[in-house]
Amino acid sequence: MPRRGGPDPDERRRAEQSEAALAAGGIPLAASERLDAFRASGERFFTSDLSVNELVVTRDAGFRPLTQVMGTCFYRTGWQSYPWARGGGWLGGSGWGVSGAGETVELEQQTDAWNEARRLAVGRLAEETRRAGGDAVVGVHLRRRHHDWAAGLIEFVVIGTAVRSERYELETAEPALSNLSGQDLSKLVRHGYWPVGLVAATTVAYVATGSNQQFRSTGLFSSWQNQEMPDFTRGVYDARALAMTRLGQQARALDAHGVVGVTIERSHREIERDRGGGTKYTDLIIEMHVLGTAVVEVERGAERPPVSMALQLNDPERT
Image 1 (cartoon, rainbow, N blue to C red):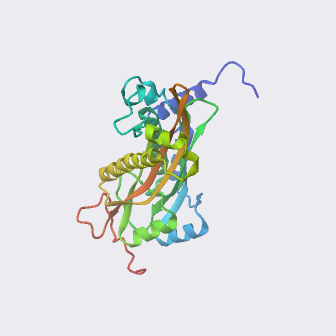
Image 2: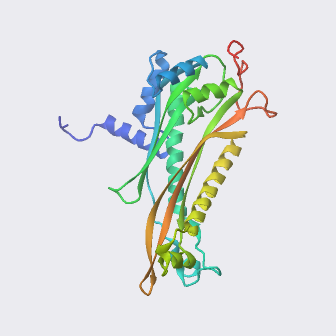
Image 3: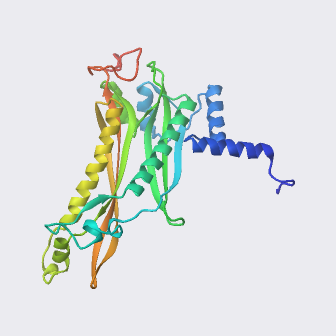
């Protein structure tokens, strides 16, 4: 029913508070209130995206599911210039290197947008977990997409199940986020490891076709034989190396001993570039997304892990 007399002052105040919380990387007021009320109630009822098998092994490992948690972010990418449009140099002019090979260059604006959007979404997932009283999140699923209805608009959504340990006294400021399933988390804990964080990275790279590849793909005998497109092959390797380097840096910042459950997803789109004189080159823009769980070896690690436990990780009754 339409409201008379203009907007309600209380609703306007709440909207402003939610906007401020989002600007600070947090969650809207309604979400924080719901989770605070859930934690204060102490009720045992839970919601989760765990399968029956995941629920059983998670409980066997000593973790009680609390509630499904989520983090999301819509993010708009700023203007991105392509290498061949910058003027001069190896793509802006006529120079293509001594060998005629193509080049790979990272598109900083698009790369930064993906990484920042994911950071905000994962941060909101962690905040929901803290407010719910969780020690960890099991089975984090990350979804991302481009939206055609707005230029440069991307979206990240991360969903998982917040759990709390009933067997170990964990003293940690941040909940352990993991893309591992309930079964895998149970195996990890039983064998003396603990997840210390979700690590992820994205690289968006422009892969330019060099004159050598162009000649092979459009030359007189180009359609007569099978042949590799080396510039594109090298571009995929370059993009993966950049993404994995960032992943490793994040894991080391957490003092992790390794990363498990690494997934690599790649997509590409073609860009047709006019070389002049009626010659057109087909270049690629490659998106490389990597995701994994950083872990520490609790029992045998020489360094003190970033979690304090009152009991040993392996349950003596179940080894």
